[in-house]
Length: 220
Length: 220
Image 1 (cartoon, rainbow over the protein chains, first blue to last red):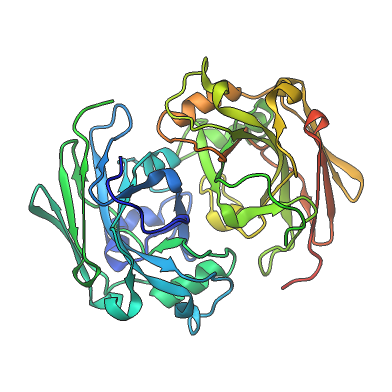
Image 2 (cartoon, helix red, strand yellow; image 1 turned 90 degrees about the vertical axis):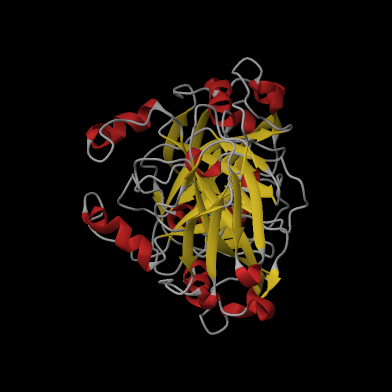
């Protein structure tokens, strides 16, 4: 499935509802049972090793699936273990940033983060190179552009994160050690565009470079 | 935190509600909103690398936590990659079985499998040795006994799994490749006993051996 070597060797963690656009899109649903409010602590999910796909990969969807949601995001790549960091010293553990496409099968419920939907083989294509922090600059200046077959389908600013990178590392590393090579995604937009088999996807991440992959054509 | 080398190097996956006792304990709650029924496909969760703790470890709870739920279970350890296996050929990928304690912070909601609650550092103590299938025999003959400070607190049979080992591997590997060294837990009992800091835990797994660890005394 992969066409280039992967630039990382750890586990990828993601966080939902970390931007103002997503909270606005979720809207009233966040106030319904059983939670009756937006999450106050980071709600995390995991993309384990089987989900990693390299630049240029053709990702095959699980049997019976005709659509996949493609969410452009950025991974914080750890160059040193992060345990119980404060926002003030969190960035010391960061090796750089990585452009990532977080793939999910569409599913009805926001409330049950299903492993099948987010963790099928190839559900986490990553760019070929980790860009050092000094080179990438502040994420708040970046906008990610997603194209399906050359047509623009989504534009996402990183200026509206609810928890910025230092705060996110502090909140997660309070209970969970992030090891060297692990990746923490800064969040995906709720309701990102959906691609069908055969789609060529490209994400332009400005200073973070680009990421291209495709959704495999044939059913398996 | 660890006192012995770990017998595995992959990711640990778990499944909830895979036994008749748990379904009975959950009872009417499974029929409430938003799901209105017990899950029909395996509901999985992940215990990433930071959760692994070796035989003899003293596991420190996250700050502010005074109790931890201790669920004795068995991990299926993969000796070969398992992708799209059928129940008939699933066991060919299994290297053996491993006695595991799946630790969770008590939380109110069955519906939001929270990462903080299940994935804090040390939340997955494992026995020192993977027992080959031929030596372990059929899991259905095993009973796991859990002791807190020498007193019996739980007894759990493996005869009542809703999905047995071959079926579980087939259902999960349909969408997710389990790699060599990965572990798939056969399920934990809903509402397992809770331990306080300072508790010495021992799990006796019959042919699978035993697993001992403790919950660290002091808050960090």
